[in-house]
Image (cartoon, rainbow, N blue to C red; front, side):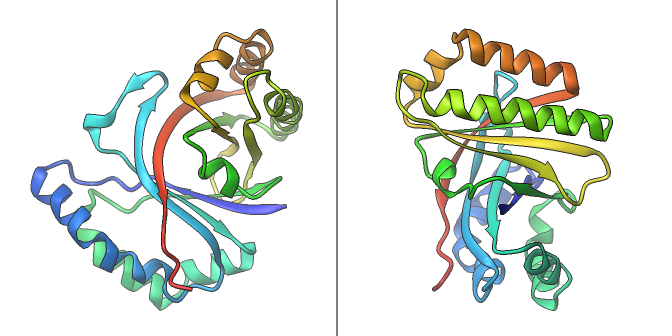
Length: 215
C-alpha cells in the first residue's frame, strides 16, 4: 500500500507569471518540501497531452507527491506550513487547486521516474464500479509488466478525499516507442474500453522531474 497525491495547479497563462514561477520555484518549493518528513518522493512538471490532444501551450502544471501515510498528508494540509506555502504561490494561480489523494497498490516512484509517464483517471458513479475498475487495473498491470516491448512500471488505486470516487492508474513507459506500441495492443485497448464503460476516463501524459526534498 502507498499514498499518492496528484495536484493540477491552475497557473495564470501570461508570460510574466510563467517566468516568475520558473524563476522562483526553487525557493517557493522549499515551503512544500523542507521540512516535510511525511514526503517520500515528489515530482513536478507539465501536462503534455490530455485525451490525445497536445496541451503544451496551455501550460498545465502538475505535481505528484508520495506520502508515508494518510495521517501525514492530512496533518500537512492542515498545518501553518502548508498555509504559508499556499499563500506564497497564490498570486501565480487562478484559484486553489484540488488535492487528489489516492491509496495506491505500489509506490508511484518507479512509474514517475520513467521516460514517459501516463496517468489515467476514471470518475465512477458508485462503489461497485470502483471495485470493478480496480479489478480491471489488476489484470492490466500484469499485462503491461510483460508486454513484449519491455517492462512498464504500474501502480493504481482509489481516491480517499474527493467528492466523487476516482480510480487512478499511473504507468511509467520505458520509451515512447513502447507506449505507442501498446496503444495498438488488443488487450490494452480492451482495458481502456472497460474503464470507459465504468465511468468518465481522462488520460494525460506528463513530463516531470524529481524534486529535491532537502534531506
